[in-house]
Image (tube, rainbow, N blue to C red; front, side, top):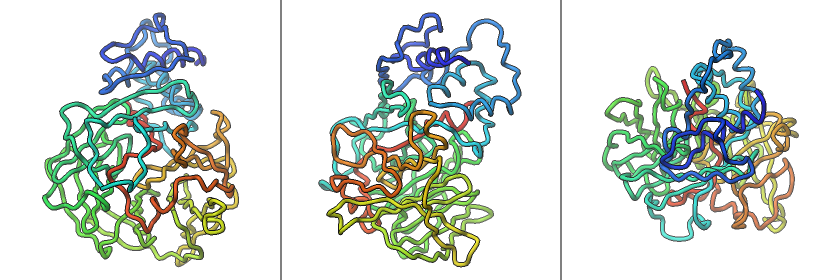
Length: 424
């Protein structure tokens, strides 16, 4: 598949609002131009009409197509692939994620000036003003602008991002918004007095929204609310956490792991019945800020530590959780080798890893932050493992474990669009 052919098709998949994709021969956008799409993006933004003529490659085995997918260097390559024909789109839905993608996630940047967390009263986000820009680290001259669809509830709290969907709630209302197409999903009304807003709410999907077993989980201080996608009601499960907040949730080897404000790690099981238990862990260090990152068969933790009380900035170290000993133990990782990690300051947002980042112009042994400083020109930053981060970075206390999250701020984050997780 020639590179020029991939770029040409990728541009077709980013039409102007209200237009249909143009045939390949009519594509007029240069790959050097900035492609901007107002949202709600049309459905055609994520699909493409099959090319005319016979499809000599339509009958390729999924195993071969999976090997091709594993070689992609950018999200644009992925778009070109799924736009080739229906059988190739279907192959994505059977792609075994043990391979992982070799291209980075997209960068999500809220439209408008940077707002410092806790810079004012905690208020719900006005969705009528909620717009964002998606950009590809591999192709900085291409971008996509979307917004929350019309006729959506206006004032809501941000609870997280999962499988390509922003998660909002306010009182009894809940809303999922696709970051790439701008489409929305409205779950049934939540139980009253759920206490999901302000400082304590966090949400996550257990699987892609199109999956038959997908569930939406929303956590408050006291309860977990569970919605089986497609049903018309919620289940409520009490939490025994002493009303401490859950700060981050990840999926690792089929289990749900959650870390709370006291840095306690818990596993959550939904079947055959809801259960939650603490994982005994031996801690040998203290950190002002922590992020969990699932990296293949490893559960990693990024720890931010101040140097000279913060006067000389801070640095980041990475640890791997060793489950072979009891209690489990965090073991320092000296080098990430050919791996790059992607995190956001807000731990309600997803974290990712990428193998061989040099293939798309990235750098191994680095941590890519969606936003690390208050520089208005900054989009994302890369910090090498152990490297000193300047003290003009965003003060870590506003995202630290001891400080409650600001649900009134939608910050920069990394995201894979929902169509990555299944396009059959």
